[in-house]
Length: 602
Image (tube, rainbow, N blue to C red; front, side, top):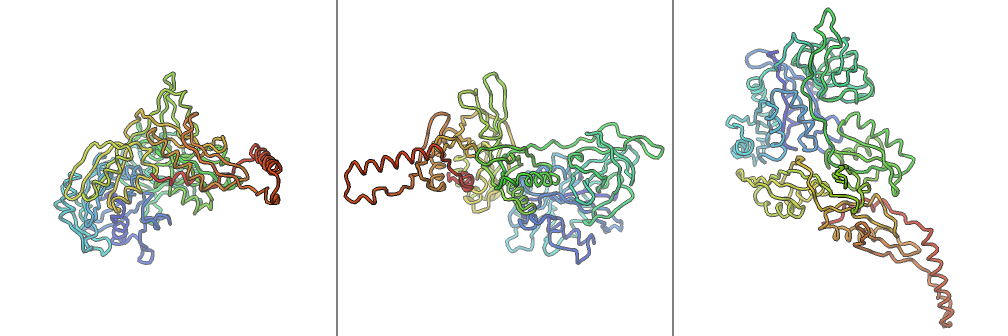
């Protein structure tokens, strides 16, 4: 037990944690030279391409320290992006220590702080590391000062390293051995193991990544999940050295995998505790109480996903089911829209998560998708004080039938160099932000705002990056629901509501947004043989209108001179024909119209 160290790496996006993990694996001989690829632990193509880590991955390494002993190091690589912060908290709760990697040329950034606080809350020992020392603009002194200022941990002996050139790797491994405590746990107690992650392998079924806290689990033993009481047989056990290596048993303090022929991922709930099924002569029986698990993750952003062809609905459903096997935080339920037919309403952790799910559906499952505008969940208080959660704008009750609407408010932390403070504050105020705090740390400024989540989901992140030339970073956490004057704006085509185009906005912006959407729709919908009225309405009030003029044939062309009554007769006849057409005609809403709502400029 004393020679085991469990640690993870936390850092902001692009500060080099996956590359550092590569170096540690290489130094400990975890992979042959030829299997070594850049970012070994990022196993999805999309992770390599975007250069981000989405799923937490593990590697069990053997390291011979300077004191001559061999240590087993379990490294858990974590994502850095705020949307995947629950992956981080899961990984950290399986560790006793964490390497806090800070880019020496950029200093502390938003997610570094968010993840570091998660680590400190969980009581994890944090070891600061300054990466990218090979860059000409590296400024280690400033980075150390920022770590002490912003996070408040002692950084005097922060280890300078460069994951790219391999500088300082041995020092990091020595620090892991020296500073991070060995796992607490009792080998001789009843088995308790926590599921850190689970994913689906088409060959063996569900693979569970577990951290054994107490006791041991041998191959072939029967175990049960404490939350669901389901019992399985441990067919295969082992550890990852990134490649999987089978073992006969897993003991207290180890991180490894269990394969038990489970077919659906819901059975292996992340955060559940595994214990033995019953007492036998050679074991200690089931544990009394479960380990403290994780909270269930709540989706924050909702959007509708629809197949472009109606006959691809089943394909989309299968694709979502398979994706959910690997991504427990994705939630979806079927929904029907008059404009788009059958599809799904999906819940995501945030915008990046939504983009990645869409991209994976299109890439790995060849789906062609229409996505509606992302929206957030509103609380609607009905007259009898009944509270209803509304996650789809078209389900919002009429203004007259409800008491009040509450929208989700989040606390946003923004970090940026001081040159951009003005621009960022202007942006935050446009988004109805209320400034709560402002603090200077060296050259960096941290602004804290309370903002409606609905303002953030559309384009806040992109705008923030553009006003700060990419230097600002943000992370947000849910605070509460607060009563607000928001209204539902419906879009009508010839008096018919198009449900997929409804948006929920604050009353102060409703006129403006209504006009902008209507103007955009006018450009997109093609001209018909009759006039098409496009209107934006709040309840029964029309707040904006555009008309697409009819295409018409010149019926007077063959009259030359002609008497006025003859011309009038032809025009009246054409008019009557157009009127008849309008009664039976329906307007095709093209695919771009749904995307146009996303791109209405503020």
